[in-house]
Length: 315
Image 1 (cartoon, rainbow, N blue to C red):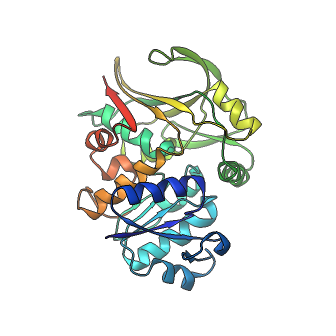
Image 2: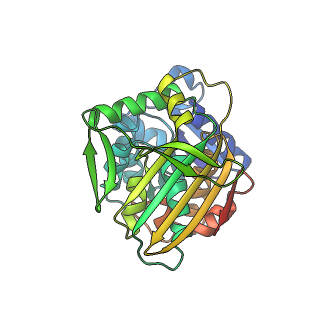
């Protein structure tokens, strides 16, 4: 069976990835920084290139699920590139995504292949259809709640430190760092969710994955206020979220839309990442090198393959 290394295999998302690989007939090879959590695995520190080389020996691909990705993405991706094998991560850290996109590779390297970043990029790409450009993309997250993992909180803190406490948005064809408050407004989600209060410019990895390959000068993300408050209070995670991701692409007076529905933003990152690896290994990627999800895969076909975990409607 084909072996795939999972770096950060003992974290919440990592465990979902390991289970998804096994379900699809792959052999997961467990790795990460904490040897005590990896009995029988291949522990490797990100500051030990030789240990990372040994960890990746003989595997067909790598999925990095170990945040903060500011610390892990470049070392693990660089090791995969050196070994000539595909690299996929589930990073939602905008700055870490930009670090990875700056790499050069002869094999497939796909950052942000997860609920935040990859899913929005696939939905926006599918919604664009035959359009070669658009005026704006809007990605609205309707979450029933959000109880972040310790890894999510740590990653968010690192990102805030890297941008000096400012927030970031993509407007006018470039990233902007701002220190004003997020705008408050309402978003009309599909029923049964309906119209909900949201925070605008609640920027996630979509603002770097989408404009990387789509000609669009404005990408804006939105988050339901209830979910944003859950993130701020950092209560213990006791239940999985339900979600609606509503993506609208506008050009002139026309609008196209793609909507994804499902449950558990951490669990669904596993089929996204593993589907990406499977497509790369079976020759169903459009290109080699560093790319975002919508850039390297057939977006509509990829999204349909995620059923029933993620249900997608196009209009």
